[in-house]
Length: 348
Ligand code: SIN
Image (cartoon, rainbow, N blue to C red; front, side):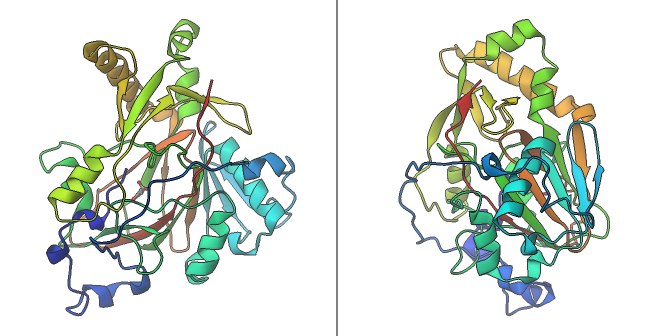
């Protein structure tokens, strides 16, 4: 996962009064954390995907005013001429279906960042209960927001990965350790570098399709452990919050999308630790091959480039992503994620 500023020590946070907060375009979303904030363990819930109800023609989303441009054949569509904030139930259902089909949608020129936290949360909640992150910076009074923040003094990504890494690229699928990991996820940018700070995405459906039928067969039926432990330990070491006891959850290595029926690899270097029933070397061999396979798949990856007003919506079940920290460390980047949870993964 992308760590957030919550993983920094409280006393190291920039002092808002002292200045940095006043430079933010949206200081309301300044990352907030309270080491005493605690959440109960996540409860299982029944989930019916919004996309199930959608009209496949998507008349409310893809109106005559809407323009779409596919970024790559397998993943990613840029959309202009429609406001997410104006969509009713039918439009949001269609958005869920379209995100499942195209994996990532880049909505341009949105008013989403200006509609206020209640409406933002209500829209995201259409897709499922919103995860309250156990360690990341949230917004005071609104634990549904996951704040991604970097300023000249706080380089959260590098801290999380370790400063001696040759690359800051870190493929992951958000909070995959949850029993019911997320689906239609919203990410909106508030302050961004002039150039850089893009998000990389890949299609786990296409990554799976590239494997030989024999290898696919071997993977189907396997389960892997996804762990929140490292994230929690990292936060604890830095004096940050651990709002919920870290969980370790088994998920199928290949999952089926509840609406499209597509099969997707469900492993990511961020959280997947071992294959159940395999010895360590066997598990490492297969997982490292799969991590390498998806990381190298430039022909099923895209780069989401932000502009003011961009909202990116992705289906976490069939994608992995990574931030790129390719901009000078004097530059501020500030974004917010809303992460609705979905079904218990369906084995392929
Ligand atoms: C995330 O991993 O959720 C955020 C990606 C980014 O910061 O570009």
